[in-house]
Image (cartoon, rainbow, N blue to C red; front, side, top):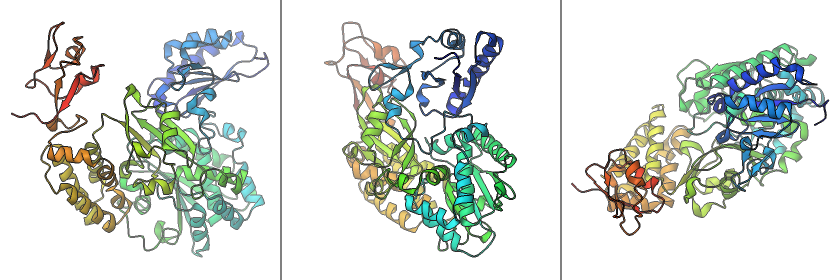
Length: 605
């Protein structure tokens, strides 16, 4: 590196890395630089950033311009990083990222399979800027699109650009964004409102959270452009109350935007006015639904209403309202900057651009990814995700959150886009993607999500309130060994009723986990009901373990792992399980490398 080149050290301080002491790493490194600043020709710049995406490997320290990417950094590593890398330019091999695809350590994250297969649009700045610095955002072209929109484009031209780009809502339904804006623009009723849905309630999802935490100005810029296009002068960012860092960073970004003239009266001398404020949600899953969210903003109970009149006509306080989710707003400035044709060239015929996913579960590289629409599940899970942990077999992946469906191995080559997922019985949702292996019980998965949805139902409409509860009761019976003939048929009948008669999207999509697990994994339901056996060994009332004497290597590892001392044996004879002491925890099966522990059905007596 040239002696005159400026070195920048980026320390990930997203929620995951913060939980692993990344702020202490930043503080210690900052003190070292302050104490020994005289040792540098040019003092390194230290920045805290949002989530890099590779959450499994945090805390992450990225050193530029050399592109040295350190993973799983501990506070104790700071002195070595300072002395060897910052002072001497040496690379610490043990801290480099170990690429799960190649088994090699790579110096730059850009050389890893996880990163080089992605295309970042919504996540373009995250991990590269300090989310608390408006100057960092501006340095990377921030608010340039706003100036273009205000002084070089009319509202009609902006809407046409968004419409021609093919951008669809990233919050779940996939409604065409440009069409929504056009409908709101047509309504001659004022005031008009815009809103950002940051109420991300899906288990295992953290896409919107990461954007709000790591690049809040991209959302604000998108909202200002959208407000100008539809004629709104008031906006709201609705954020889950549990997202403390997101609330903090978005609030600061709004404050800084006011100070720089990007918000408030007469924005940049254009004559356009807009005020935006943060509204903290109450943690109710149903408030992710558009009309329930708006009721919550108004100070009412977060319950949905019938949508015979769209929110673009009558939304907040009965006035025209445009609601888009975090990721949708973050895409807007890039479309205005690079043009509709550029964005529309990415993705598939009916699903344009990219999609952000939180890739979690039984996959080696868990984290945040962004890929072009149409990328297959196989590429996401096995090439970007690195495959299944522990050498186990892939079983299913659930997309779309708790209301999404479970997609089996035979559909791994399915392209990930709105229409393909819908045809498979699942949905895009906001972008959660949970990978499951052979040790997952699909009946239990359906029960788990129905329990979540039953608890989160607002209770306003009977089909959702009572229908989901009754479906849950049936699934609980099946998992407990009380399943009977006719249960599957009753579940299917109830599913259709709940889908057709529920008031909002929560109820209408709630049966998806049940319908897809029955469709693709019906044999597991039949094993639970007819054989009183859980093939995955998850449902305790339907599981017992036996050590196969022919496969047992007499190593005794299973006995050491058993928490109740239920396994006994001698070094030269097969080990056995005392079923009276066994609590069916599965520790022995997980510990055995020789597959000697077999899963049997319900214990008698």
